[in-house]
Amino acid sequence: MSANLQKQTVSISNESKGGRRFSKQAIMSGFQSLKVRNFRLFIIGQVISLTGTWMQTTAQAWLVLQLSDSPLALGLVTTLQFLPVMLLSLYGGVLADHLPKRRTLIATQTLLLIQASAFGILVGTGTIQLWHLYLLAIFQGIVTAIDTPVRQAFVAEMVGRDQLVNAVALNSMTFNGARIIGPAVAGLVISQIGIAPALYLNAISFVPVMYALYLMREADLFKVVMTIRGSVWAQLKEGLVYTWNTPQVLVIIIVLAAIGTFGYNFTILLPLIANYVLKVGADGFGALSSFLGLGSLIAAIGTAYVTKLRLRYVLIGAGAFSILLGLTAVTPIFGISAAILAMLGAAGIVFMTTANSMLQLLVPDELRGRVLSLSVLLVMGSTPIGAFLIGLMSEHLGVPAAILTCASLCLLGVIVALVYQRRHFSPATIKPAQAHLQTAAGD
Image (cartoon, rainbow, N blue to C red; front, side, top):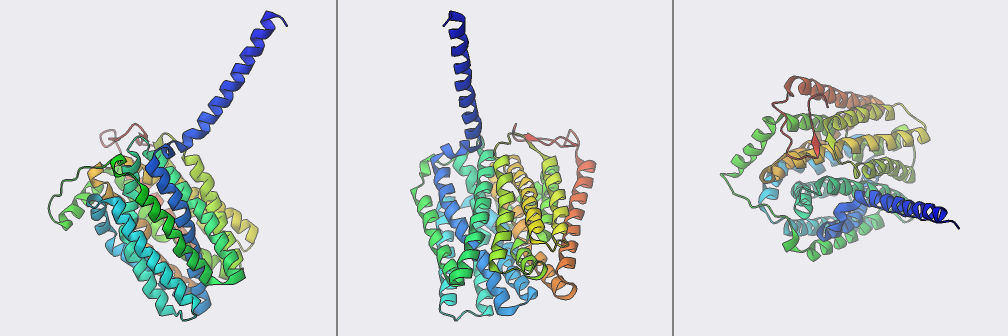
């Protein structure tokens, strides 16, 4: 072999190794926040716990329809579950800014374990009644109102600002991976051995996340030194005033209000679509939930590699979500509905993950819990309004008309946000907190 040929061979070999090394580095860049031990423990616990939560959500919706055969009853259970979130989530945001988050989460997860166990026992013994579901839903809502803003604010405390965008994306990936596995497993378990075992599995799933929280190292957390100023109301007002006076935050909040109230009501929308539009059983309902989660997971994986955030992603994602939601109302074919739900899940994740990441980065550390609690209020706390309206309209106008109305209201919210953006965004109002953000007018 000539010297030149040997050099060419070595060069090609090195390029091949470099390409493989680059490819591996590119792939791993989407998971860089998992290098943080505390966050890695958190994610492992969340995968298991959230899978159980989605199993209970699926089982609960199916149980309500079995007990009542009423869309209105399903809407009422959902309303009662999220009414405490509507009333208490802003207060939960104040707590998130002041309480030790890890220990608070251990307490809330313990309470949710107790609720899940009681639910399973009532169903397993055959004593469950509709009013039991109402009380269990209220209890779960009260705990969730504290748990959710604390858990969202805890992500920044685990990884710091530098890894925050990636951590939020991975957290979203975890949530939607569980959305695929949970309903699919629940549908299988319910159809083969009943609802109670699905609920028992959810109760057990809280143990790993509590253990993961216990194993975390307090010294490794990026804690924020808080200065308590004034009463609880004064602190709430401080967060609301900041949001109102910050255009790039307020435009996100406007979209969250519309989509959260009228669109992100999958706990009631999916069982209604399955039961009244497509007319499928528990396994079909679980499959629909899994397709929604599959689209969400694919989008979440994509967002893990995003390094620059743009407001246009929020608006495009929300607009696409609204249109796809409307299409689910007029599609009676299972395969087409499943494909639409997958795209709906993807659009929702592009919107929701980008919105959440931008809020986490834009908002000062000392206000993060309160502003995030406002997003929790609008996405989860507004569910009582949306769920009750969907149940009421479905009862009197039919499920397709109810879904089309909600989709139209979602799209109206996106249009309002676009108008607000055009009128209020100028170079003087754009003050990105981090280099990750790209929120210039027109974006």
